[in-house]
Each structure stands twice: as structure tokens, then as C-alpha cells.
Image 1 (cartoon, helix red, strand yellow):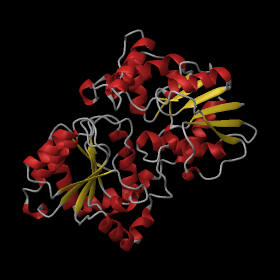
Image 2 (cartoon, helix red, strand yellow):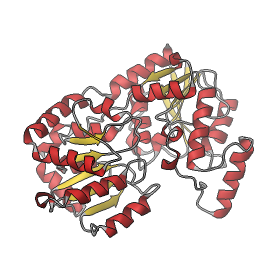
Image 3 (cartoon, one colour):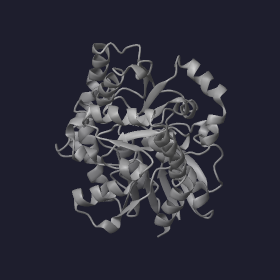
Image 4 (spheres, helix red, strand yellow):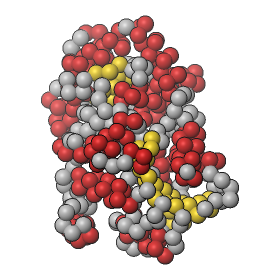
Length: 400
């Protein structure tokens, strides 16, 4: 079989959830697929060194011709017409206009269908001219139904994926049921191939190297004790609610020395978060380093007293698994997929209530018996999710 895979998102230097999913799942296919199958990994630019050596039946193909924007819809579409494959796998939610009958894509979550306010409405593009051009092209190709903004992009790409793909993958049972019920599609078309943990980076041995943890903390000017959140600083992640909860927490004298580390780039609503940090006089207590090196993350996570993820909506929530894998107790939302992922290995809180978030953090920090149970249970829970298992499940779907 000749298999094509859109590896463009997996080839980004600064990877977040979707990019890591694509990267690890593709690498898991190195051993899960048959040696006689030809596999083509489509990229926008030269492959990064972290791919390592490819198996003999895998090869990169860089699609360089212009335009650089709308890469999937234009360049990958043309490639599918000129050099068709038997099967196309797209691990990051948008498929080309022209694709083979046997196309598989991953729709990670559909929060945009339920909470429009959590997604950007501004036009995509850095310059005024580019914004107008992108908006024109998108409206032209969609007959005026969609514009070039984040919200419309998600809605358009989901519907395109549903219309073009033979099989839809998603990352949790919650997202599977949400997709089936929202779009009224045949349940047999939707399969769960979950996210997992990169155990080569996130594991119990991280805590056995306290000097490395201290070294990285020093590099980031980070002083213990601290709480940690990972992901874009934005409305969807409920960053503002976490800052409000942290303010309440620090009113208790025993938590006066705590800091809050928000690791991630800035998204929709981040301005309001920074305004509140200033209003609450927390500029020295809330640390926002932006994106940090991937090799730092396990040690920064291991150094945190607790990992907090009070998101309004998550299709999966990989960071909660990564925190558990390094022995850091988790406090997370009782909504969407997070209860499914953490099971009884995390403290669940109501994301819309800062007092609930604060109380959950307090309980984990002060109840040593509970904290110890969550840590031990978390280690076991994280080990249930491996990229090898997910890769094997995907291979079964490909050849099924």
C-alpha cells in the first residue's frame, strides 16, 4: 500500500498538543506499519533533526511550491491529484480539497461548536494585505460561508474532514460521543486513538535528579514552591479563572510564598489575564515565561507542588498525564474529557468557580495522605497510555 501522511504539524519546532500527537503517532507507525508499505511524509520545509533516522519504507517529501499559506488546501491538494496515494492520514484536523477515497483524519475536539466565545474572531494574517487576501480566498472557496478567522477555520475544517474522510479519529471517548451527537454521523466512522505520554522524557526517574531540577529552575529564575499550568494563556484554558483562584489561595498565610507558573504562548483573552495579574499586585508571583524548551518541561513539572488545569474544554489534556508521569499531583476541571483521562488520579474542580479551583489546590497541598495517593495512582494511570499502543491501533484501522 502507498500511504501518505501530512507530517507538516509534526515538523514544527515549538510543538504543543496537536503537534506532539502528530509527531509521536507518526513515529509509532515506524514499527506498527508493514515494511512492504511505502509511506510518504509530506512537509512544508526541511525535516527537523528530532525525527531521527527513518525506516527504509518511509521518506519525506517537501512540497515547496507557492503559495505558502493554505498549504493543505492548495499544495497538498495538488499533490494528491498529481501523485495520488492509496490512503492519506491527516493527524491535525484539516484535509485537502482533493484526497483519496480512503482518507483518515483526526478531529481532536469540537469545543468551537459549543463555546464560540472561546475562539478568535479576528482575521488570520500578519499584514493588512495578507489578511484581506486570505479572507477573499477563504470566502471564494467556501462560497461566502466562512471567513479567515480561527472560529470559522475550525468549523470549516471539521465539516470538510467529515465530508472527505472515510474514518474519523479522535482522542477520547468524550470527544467521540460529542462528534457523533453533534454531527449526527454513523458511530462506526469514528474511532478513538488516544494521546499518550512520551516516557523517554516524562517518567519517575526525573525526581531522582534534584540537581537537574534545581539547575533548570535557576535557568528560568524560578523559586519553589510553585504551582504550574501548561498550555496557551487563553480563555479556553481558563487562565483568568486560575489567576483568580491563586489570588484567593494567597490570602491564606500558609500559601503566601507560593508562585504560579503559567507556561505557554499567549492566546485569546491573554490581555485580560495580564491586566488582572497587575490589578491583583501579583506581577512578582505569577511567572509567564512563554514557550520553554521541550527538554525543560519534565523537570519543571516535577518541581511543581501541583499541576493545575482548570480548562473549560479539552479534547484530551495531555499535560495532566505528563504531570502524573513525573509524580506531580493534578488538579483539573470536572468537565469534558478530563475526568475520563485522570479517572480517580486527580482532584476534580468546577472550572467556572475560582473558589472551587482554590479549594481543590488547597486540599491537595495540605492533605498529605491524599497527595501521596494521587501521586502513586497517577504513576499507574499514566502508564496506561502509550504511543506504541496508539500507533498499533491506528495501524489496525489503516489495514482494517
